[in-house]
Length: 472
Image (cartoon, rainbow, N blue to C red; front, side):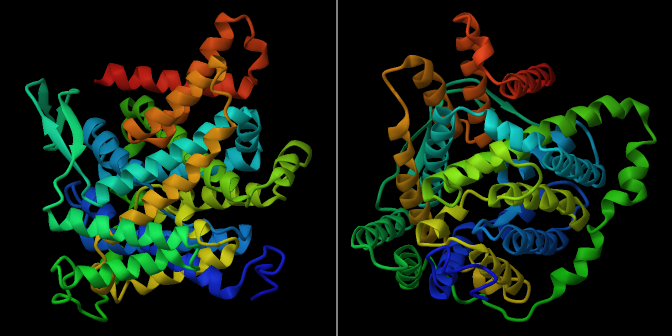
């Protein structure tokens, strides 16, 4: 094991990797409950089947990442991708969930194609250093915002404004809804605050495994506060596995591919859905790799030289991109929305995770959730939220490399960071940075300084935004 994962070469130990894997798992374990909740809003898509598909697709992608790329990144159905699956592809565009699963599968194979043909690698090389640093900082702010929400630190105030009710029951509100600090007489917010204090002190004192220790301590404190409920814990319940048959390979059923290509009027709509999903999933993963990998040193300068000088899939970065593509392609076959690399992997990296052994631990814990789902479900979001806030603090260090006195860099960098958090979407933040970087260079007469891949990607993002605007 030590030799396979090259632990000594990466200056790590089995103990450190296990702690890192456990830490990453607990910060992203919410997906095994949230993903079924979102996808099951599609009529006829069974909750238990999605639950099993979520776990198996996450474990498959993470194991592939561990064994092939040997990097500490974990994968699971993306939060943005599952919302896009339900509310855009199914609710707005009118596809059935079986058709949507086939669209996810096709999109995944396109991701493999652009990875193998080195287009994905060329995209990474085309991004200027200051935008890479802003992506790192933006992801830090993004996951810290998730932490603030999950810790119950925020409440949202609504004054008189314009609101509209969607068919799916969601409400679209204008800027009349704004966040504010919650009252700390709320036991959930109080538990989150206690967890943040414990974790901050442990990190400052450089205690090994500080984030994981903080999570466990917060869980234990949550028991007498009656936030952690032990009464409904059940063991060895395999019902979800038997329900997997209802979603697995549904993409290739008559209701999936059979209906999708029987109506030629859907072709343009299908291409639009694939393009939008492709942009989102591709740049979510690239942003995560650049952000967490750049700050931690997992993808160092030698990795970047490899991107520039070598052909094929050789470096850890290239192998990680390929693994992400494989996971995305197979997620639709399992019966869930697009699987992608998770920004929460930064939590495990921050406590010392450096190799695929971290990812393997995460995958094993995912699989253990099949019979022990109710046991893992007792972990409250307030226990893992402080970890995301601490990781956000660590990742923000990259913004020091940006020349803020140079507005050519400062404006695209600021928009990348702020929109990533405020729009709650990694790819939208990247899109904003790309687009404004190109606009500034164009009006300065320096457009030739922009890599064609970057300008082409910016145009694709613009087309995507135009399509979204037209569809309302």
